Length: 448
Image (tube, one colour):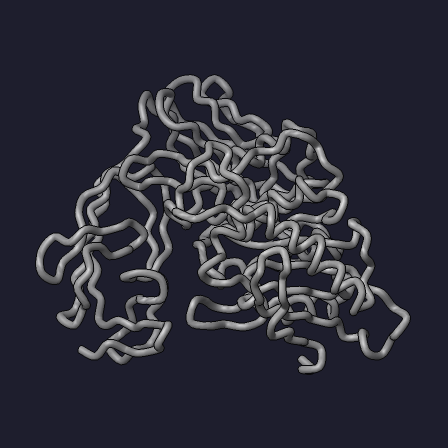
């Protein structure tokens, strides 16, 4: 990309927040050539990862995706404004007032002030300095994790400013993995606003962001009056964890939804557990539809055909209602597309499954009480961490073994290792071995 199209403001000062941060601005291909044209704007949180990788994570490469979709004629040209977070203030700025009054992160929530910073300082500056289309119908706000949560909050609180909201893996609940206590971090809005919403969550995020919580927010949106496939798009992302690489892999979908043409459905898949208990956790299908543009979404208003309705019923949102023990086939229909699954109904299925996980670490491992391998692991013995855990059934994890943020495993030569993955099944036993460690903050490999 022409470097003149990516502008960096090194110290954007906020009077409201009394701090400075980097802001990156992507200009579309025709910006310099057509001085009369104005453009929609996408505002993004965690802006240092929108176009670049650093020691805290990979890049979304939003500029590359936008350039590609524009070149393919699938979306209009846009301006992207990527607002960096300030590391020590990120959680504080991305959290609005806690609905239960809890201070879970030992910080004063400043979400309302960050919201004011965007609306009163950032957007007016961009609208003044660049040829924007300033109306809400041309203005989107997007982020992931805590950035997804703050997008959701600001979207409902500032719906006259932002007409499109992208909340990827919104961090709406903090789960205590030891007690499984749910601690909600956000008010859930029940008033219909004139906004388009993209919301998603990965199926391999473990305890970081759990689908049941995001789905609860989505179900509330539907009850509030949002229409799936119209002003609400939801995607339960298959094989996706909680990392920049995962958001980069699907950022094209909200971009197409907000600024382009999602295209024509070409393929359907039906994901979910093949066993459901008459007594036990609620199970849902994840009916995923792929489009010729690359767009993808979960169908929340689907048509299901059950071969033996005496055994099972499936509602339009994919909820399985078991009636009696047995086996039956379910066919999902979307336009001319179909997908099917064989389902076994049993009398009882437990909420949790037992997993044993043990990690062996090298001798050079600095002293630490816990490791993270999808699940927090206590020390067992010298050079070994792990234990046996009760985990929600069918939960999936994608991770690198780490000693904390930015301190993760490598191979013996200091090279990145592939992400590890597992899906919970009862009695699962996993044994891992770490070859070496790297501290990404210093980019120093800890020699064996």
